[in-house]
Image (cartoon, rainbow, N blue to C red):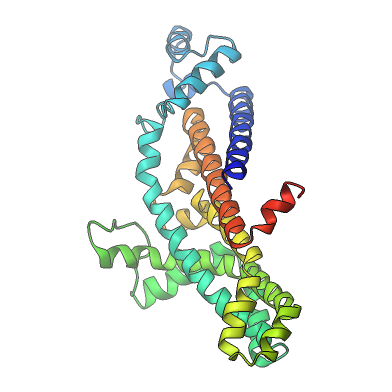
Amino acid sequence: MLRYVINRVKSSIVVLFAVSIITFFVLMIIPGDPAQLILGTDATPEMIKDLHSAMGLDKPLYQQYAGWLSDLLKLDMGKSYVYGESVRTLIVKALPVTLSIAVFAMIIATAFAFLLGMLSAVKKNSFIDYFSRSIMQLGTAIPSFWMGMVFIVYFGLRLKIFPVSGFVSMGSSLTGFIKSIILPSIVLAIGEIGTLLRIVRSSMLDSLKQDYMDMAKIKGLSSWKIYMKYALRGALIAPITIIGMQFAKLAGGTVVVETIFALPGIGRLVLTAVEHRDIVLLQGLVMFITSTVIFISLTVDILITLINPRIKSVERGE
């Protein structure tokens, strides 16, 4: 197990290094002068030249990359042009917002997907199966921006149950915190539930066809024990993988939902960095999001090998 984890960590480091090279050089060669954007259109050539020197933009790209990578390894991501704060500080401020709605969204999506997916597989071709398949289609087809606007108009403006924008920290008010994230979390959950529900149903159907299920029935085990202990355990691998991928995607920021609900999360930072061509902020965000996705993927892989150690043996060719 330790050897497997070490190999995965090594491959993750290689991926991060490759992403750092691509991120730095691609963003640095796109049109536009960061110094010009910072100083504005009234800046003189001398002012731009001085700022180039102060920012190290007058050095060759490979030297700029070496300096940037050295600072990055020290968790120094530079200072945002737009906000005037360090990128690390901005990420630390925005991360709780994004993580809050991502965690709540995945809890909601996972609960409904497993409940409906299991019932759909056990009661194949029944009403619950057709209902579940309808949910799959709706969850995949409904655009998140449209669902977000519907929720704002109905639950926020008409019923006035939930706020339509902004974020309240848990430390300030637990009730306000829950109210501020419940609508965006549900919108995100609806977008993820279709794919997860399909995977759970498919995995359960495959598990129910296995020989050990017939043996469990022959032994006279209760239906609850058959489905929960044997069928569900055999069907966990694919859903856990999908849950990890979905959470990694949400933890990296959800631009549309955060913009609609005016949430100061990672997605809003990404949008601001792109709109204002804040290269330093965008570079830091890309590396942070990449690191988050890799860490979550690594965690999911380790969890899967704990559930089914045979996967590890197959990857080693045993």
